Length: 380
Image (tube, rainbow, N blue to C red; front, side, top):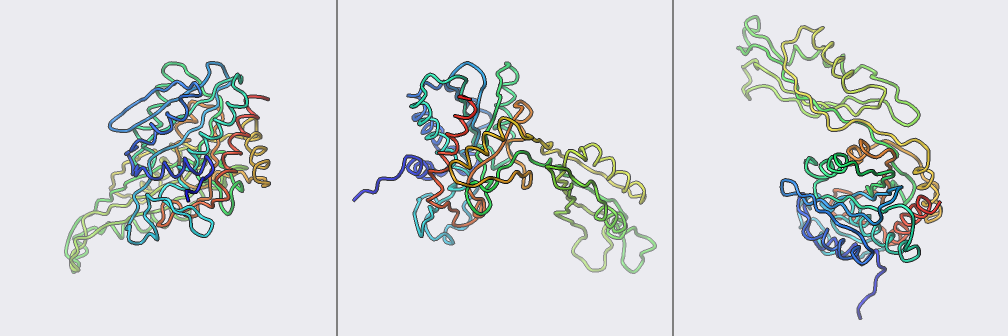
């Protein structure tokens, strides 16, 4: 006997069967276009360097409510460690398993079914509904959402509200939404010493020894105290490498990678200046390359946050917590063009892991919550 699943689950499973490991899309966008075409959406493909991007819109008036997400998923890891094939969705013990169940193909399916239900009930709704989808979020993220946003901005096409379907919930669907994200600033530091024999340290300059006092100072700094929405800025070292492998050689250089996850209280330029001040104060000979992955963004309480809170509580019975913790997302690109951006999606406990999963009981409520957001923003 064939099991008939809910519309959102059926679409979720169809998307999971497409092995869209970043930056591949594997036909996910075509599947979504097929569902939205009968609703009167207009589609625009914006291809860049092998990345598939889609801008879809229904309506021409404002306000414009956009749903944003990605069709790509991270690699599976060792398939033998999965209890079932990662691209063959399977239900076990109340959970649907498969790569992308939580991050974020269920959200994409819920976008579609929420829009379908809303348009069926309100075919002549005011405003516009849009989708911004990419296959380049889990990878380098340079030819995906960023390119689409730049295209929209160049021709003056606005977005008023954006909901990103990232998995933000912690213990149960609806317990947390992200109304902002910290910025991310990476650095590669190279400290230059003088290589020599360990028995003649007076003839060498050991970069490991040289960096140690500066490193102690950097790790002890309180960069800021955060604010109402943001936790304090954090400094974390991710890699240190030095030496030749031999036990009798003082190394000639040291490489260190570190990252700031920063709040608006400490802008990127200020962090760079403080790091240089510390390194210069310790008279280090160094080179440093900075890479800004994204500035912080924040949507304070207002129309979008209020609509999301109300829709989630109506769908799940839970009043969500506002948070800006976690990693970066494509929201950082959208926030440069859209004044109100929030993120809401499934529980994130299993994302990027073997046996990624979502509670079956959370699939339809996610669609109901997204529909509630549309109703509160376009029909208010």
